[in-house]
Length: 383
Picture 1 (cartoon, rainbow, N blue to C red):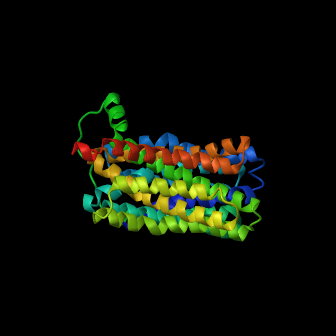
Picture 2: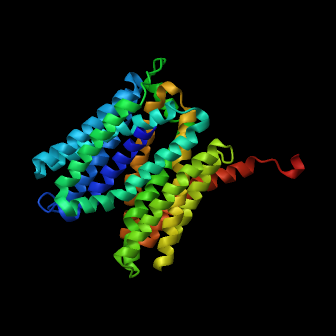
Picture 3: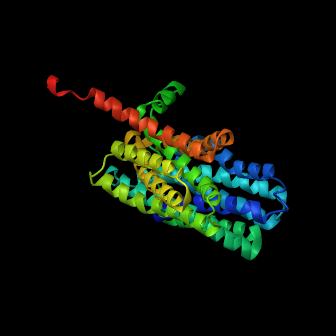
């Protein structure tokens, strides 16, 4: 399992480590905000387009070869810029990294499910999510140190070495998991399976959690700065968010496996807690920022392992790669859609209303589900 956790760390560290340092340390390549936006969108755009395809490929030929191929491609794409060190190669390397992550990220998730019995899926996905959260947390910090010490070339060199090392580790330690025989699937069958509530509910929760996480990382510093807080305080708030998410995920997974928490109850609670965190972001000053960061971290930490465990439980083993790739697509859409929604509302009102809009959107699903459940519950005079 450890090479799979390392793969999760690699994709998170690579995504945030570079994204956080492109704007301030690559004046030769990033000549405008439009160029910066394009470079940032390349990675996520490749993931949106390719994750479902690589997930389906993992079901066809086995998740392990796709995992290894993706890690090797990630190392090669990183090494390309480290060697060439030119603006054109930065675009190529960023696109290559995104395409490679599209291969090894859903494959790693599928292997986490295949290599663990159903009774341990909560723990396994909790640990996997924990290591991804560590990558998200350390990426901007360590990436900044590396760029300060040797520029973007050093950061890309470290990522190339990291990708190659994890690929070698996975080749030696991850067992071969042959693809399972499966019945032929038509487009209608795929559409029916992806429209099933057993897929839509956890995927929608994962998308909402990713949207809130992206908004918290991107906009809480803006809110703190508007309240007169310094960069140290706002940076600490983002660290609180990531730390809470990292700590909660293994605990949530363990509670699911031990029967102390159901996936549906955990996802509902996670969305409501995340919504409450976004509501706290509307409060002025350090208290609102820290409360928002803590609650968003706790809520997303609940949702992530429970969502993936629910998907694994509801998916035939021979279709795990396709399901994980499609679910990752939902997360990427949330990652992009959350900030766009908040920014759009803030542009016509204020950032406070942007936080409120996303908070209401995340709370709407759980509140509606609870209301419907209460309506179906028999009243005393009917018992």
